[in-house]
Each structure stands twice: as structure tokens, then as C-alpha cells.
Length: 438
Image (cartoon, rainbow, N blue to C red):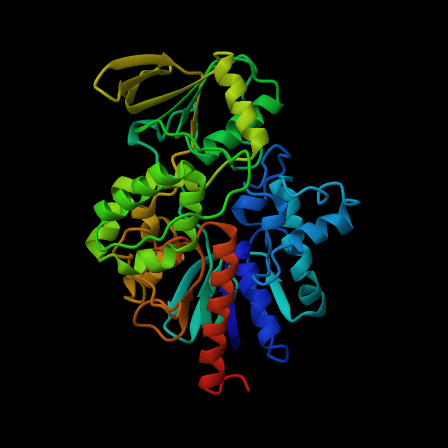
């Protein structure tokens, strides 16, 4: 029996394994089940498009919480220092993925971290667990860590079977079939939309593009000059929290500094909110939070601005009501006006379908049907306690994006790193406290 198996070898799973190996150097091997060719890549860093960049400067990205310049030093060693000389560099996400893989590689080479290149399809038991992979292999584990990413986006039913639709723009070569003169509609206006525009631009696409979402909000850019986080936040009601943010933006004149402070205080802020207030934040404030918190690299921002200025990109606040056989989208603009727009291709970048999480992933569905996991009351993932366990379970841990409902901000890389480290420490306490590992 394996003492511990991690399902998901993206950033959260890889950094959790890295911390476990440091904390338990003599423990038996840790298995990480991940279908991609290297650990650490995940969905975010497996892209090979060089136009897809990290969204914060290299000097602020690190897999080591107490060493924020670790990635910048790695860049200096592996890229002749060209990308690490200045703190405002935004290298490709693929390069950052190589960094994460490289940091874990020594453990993989010595066999203390075992990369099982497969996908978990089913899970039985409650500790020990029997994991069945896509290849049909069975792996028995005393403890399981779920470190998978968000569920896939959802599509309106009337679009699901359309040959014009690209449901997953991250699939291998998904955008290569789009011709330079094909009109493209993008559902969603956030970070994924920005990546799609960057990819199309790099490939020489020149036809009109319409990107739309219910509010028509696009991701913001970084401040032109560094600023320090501003303000102290915390309230029992979402409306009061919003008022604090607005008051401090008016006082400081710098929304970047205010949002940075809210992010730093995120766990304390989230902890003060009752479940009903958390749901209000998710429903009403999260879209505004996302576009201000998750900023785009200057290179991507410049691409978007240029295409808007040249009338090749339009960003619209609207919802999709239907699509005709000829590709005409029937849109209802915010305010009620109807609009028709002919698209040769429709790309889905709507973001994770949190409501469908436990139905879309087969092994999570198994665990839910067995009563071992449940949706978080905030609607953001799996209900998790503050020791990173699925609520009510001793042997099942949730680390990474699926624990957002408990810990709040879990999507910025400093938070991913910190919670992977804290989650690893919680696992170690369990293993050593029960005498499983000496």
C-alpha cells in the first residue's frame, strides 16, 4: 500500500510533493498521478504558445514561499540572465512550467517522487482507497490528496453540438484550424479571452473578433509604477466590504494598491464572512475582483489595446440567446438591445463550471456518491476544513483551487505556494501523529 498518492500534478500537486519530500526525506515514495509529460505544468503552464505569459513579474513568482526570487535566479541560470535582469519581465508560462518541473526533477530521478503518467477515473473506499486509472491500473493508497484544477467550462446546450464551436481552447492545436479571415466570437472576456487573442494575433489572424460576457469586463493591466498595498479590510457583510474598498480607492487614488492589500488580507477577510455573505461575494463581486486581481502582462495588454484601436476586436456586455445554422449569434446586450453577429468560429472561454464540478469529474462523482466529499457552501469547490481535509474525513485532503471556498484567495501564485506548503505540513502531522511514518 502506498502511504500517500496525489491526484493532479500541476502547480499545487507538484509543490505539495516538493514540500512533503523536504519535510519527510526518509519517507516512502510519493505517487503523483498526472497525465501530462512533466510534473508542475498543469493546465496553466502546459501551453506551448510563447505569447501566453505569466501575469506578474518573474521576480514575484516562486515555488518556495520564503524565497520569492527563486524563479528569477533559475531564469538567470537557464536563460543567460536575459529574462532575470529586470524585475518587470513577464516570460512565457511554458518557461515557468519548465522551472516547476526542474525543481521537482531531482526527486523524480531518485524515485522518491513517482510520476504516474495517467488519469484517475474512479476511487473506491474511504482510507485505504483504491484508485482506478484510465489505463485500468489499480493503485491502493492510505491517504489521498486531491490537487486537481477547476472543472471545465460549461456551454449553452444549443451550442454543444455545433461544428463551429471550440469548446476547449486549451486542447492541443485547438486554434490552428481558424483561418486568418474567419470571423471569431469569444464567449468570455477574462484572462482566457486575452490568451486566445494573443494566440490569434501571433498566427496572423486579421478578421473581426467579438468577445462578450454578461458584464463585458476585461482583465486590467499592471500599474505603471510600483505601489505599496493600501488599507485594512474586514467586515461581516459583503456590502460593507465593498464600501471599504471604494472608500480606500477614492482616498489613495490607486486601485492597484487597494486590491493588493485586499489580496494580502484575503484569508482574514473571507473568514469573517458568513456563508450567505460569501455567496453574495461570489455572485455579485467576484467578476469585478477577478479582472482587477488577475492582471494581464503588459505585452498582452498592448495586443488587446492595439486590436481594439484598429477595430479588429470589440468587447461587449451581452448574453447569448441562440445561434442560427449560418452561425449568426443572437445576443441580448446589457440594457436589453438585441444584436445579431455572424461568426465562423465560436470559442468558449467562460471559466470554470463550479456548479458542475462533482458531476463532470468521474472520481469526484464517486467520492460524492459515497458521501466522502460535498460541494462547498460558497459554490467554489469541495467543502474543506482548515486542515485541508475534506470535511468529515481523516485520510482525504484537498489542496489547491478546489479548496477556495474555505480559504478564499487561492489563485495567485503566492497563495498557491503558501497553501501547498501549509497543506503538506497538515499531511505530515497526520502521517506522523498516527504512526504511519516515523
